[in-house]
Image 1 (cartoon, one colour):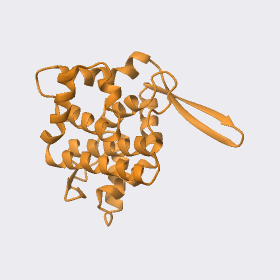
Image 2: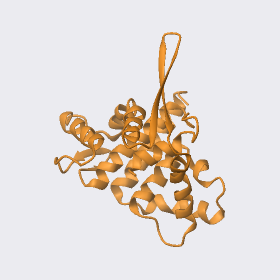
Image 3: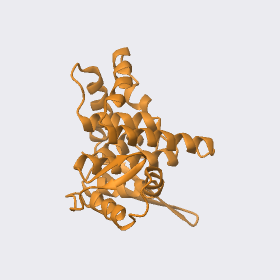
Length: 208
């Protein structure tokens, strides 16, 4: 499962599909996950607060391909914070639809008055709960996490979801989480830092 997919499942209720965070934080975390996937694929990098495309070849994943096309098509915009804000606007829907296509979630529409809302409900509660459980186990182990897992943990912390992963973990897991982000490769570490700053800015604006 890809970074943004696992973040989505951690950030939403296992049963009702309701977000555990304010939409601003959820969207920013998912946006960072989508950018992080492209960094891990080797298509982009992040340095000095700028996003740079380094490989224009289309990724295998359709959503990653779409995001890369957007980055290429709007090359005049390179600021990480700009792309986080832009992608955050549609990230819940785009990642939710990706998970629905994979059969992990099912799309549910409900209409109230003149407004239609969409929720994404898990098709299997165990699958929906697995990312948080898996990350908790990663933190309890002796060996260092993989780079994708370290990035996901960084984004979980940046968005304010740490409690969802560490709710039953011991002191060792809490300590290890504090060491993981500083050890990330520079582009990913910078992405996590900008995500945390963007969420913090949303708090200051009164969005959260």
